[in-house]
Length: 237
Image 1 (tube, rainbow, N blue to C red):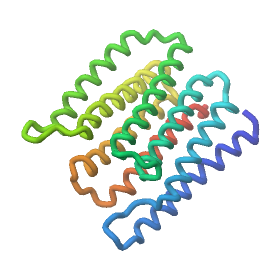
Image 2 (image 1 turned 180 degrees about the vertical axis):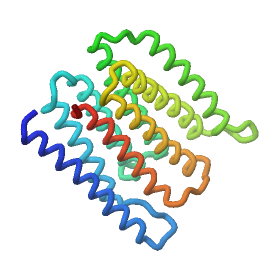
Image 3 (image 1 turned 30 degrees about the vertical axis):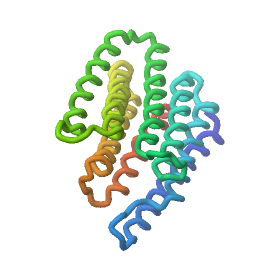
Image 4 (image 1 turned 90 degrees about the vertical axis):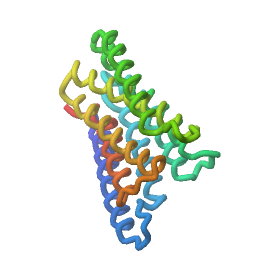
């Protein structure tokens, strides 16, 4: 890795941290009950993460190219998802649209983990079976949480159940990646779990309408930490 490459990654990393801190300060100074990072800061952070994933994929370590390229595609979809959730991209239902784009993100992350294991001659057959079983269990749990028998089932809640299965698959494969290869890949798994926490807070606040104090800040804190772990883990020694 060249000096310019590492300098670019470090610059983007520091920029993302500083932007989040600045956005949090602005959000906490907001006198209204809705405290969230300003839209412009969200967009810049998300775009910078996409840039970082691009630089790592095309200028980073060739040994982990397949991990990095799939993660880059995943981050691109998450950027579109961020724009959708912020209503910059106008869709009939922003929640369903956001879940759709982030589901694509997690699918590409799964490709990244699987490609890395296969490239390291890891047999993944049993991992696939276990991951599918876990996702089925998650579907059952999410159905109990989000779809009640005494109300008319709506599309958002069904989408949440399917999205929950998707992100659980991503986290499962992240665990098997770390379990098989160890080292820096444990950061990827921890980041995947933080991603689940971030999305669960969105589900609680936006779907179940349960109030969480400063939820907008907490969602972006966990979301940024998760994305940074997944994107930057590959360059750690």
